[in-house]
Length: 210
Image (cartoon, rainbow, N blue to C red):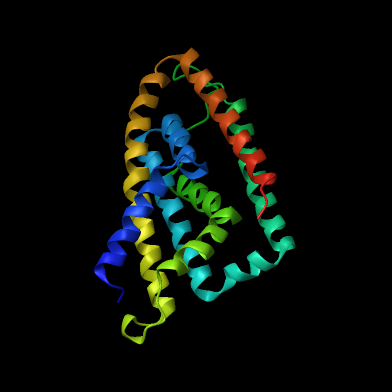
C-alpha cells in the first residue's frame, strides 16, 4: 500500500482538479438545474463509474493504445462530441415550464446514470489525463504492492474526490434549478442555456487534440 502522505496529497490534488471548471462539473451543473438534485446525483454516480472505467483502462494498459493511436483517439472523441450534440438538441427543443404540456417527462434514474457514464467514457482527454497523472503517484517498490493495484487505489480515491465535489454541485444547482422551473419563461431560458453549454462542450471535444 502506498504511504498515507502520498495518498493524502493525491486526494487533495484530486479535490482541486474536481473543482476546476471543466466538462464534467458543467455537465453535473446543467443536468441538476434541469432535473433536480436527485437526478443530478444519478449523473454524478454515472460520471464516477466512468472514472473507475478510466482507471481500469490505465491499469490494463489500454490508455497507452489511445495515447499512441490518433485514429482511436479521433473515433472516441467524435463519438463523445456526437452524444453531447444530441443532448444539446434535446435541451434546445424542450419547451420547458411546469405548466406547459409539451415539457418532456422527467428522465428515469437509470437513464440519467447512463448519461453520466457515457459522458465520462467517451471523453478521451480524461483517459489520457489519467494515463499521465496516476503513474506519477505509483511506485515500483515491492513493499507498496503491484503497480496495477496502486493505480486502482488511486482511481478509487479520485472517484471519491469527484463524488464529494460533484455531489455539492448537484445539490446547490438542483435547488436553484427547482426555483427556475416554477417559471415557464425561466425554464425555457434554462433549457436554451443548457443546450448552448452542451453544444459548446461538443465543439470543444470535437476539436480537441492530444
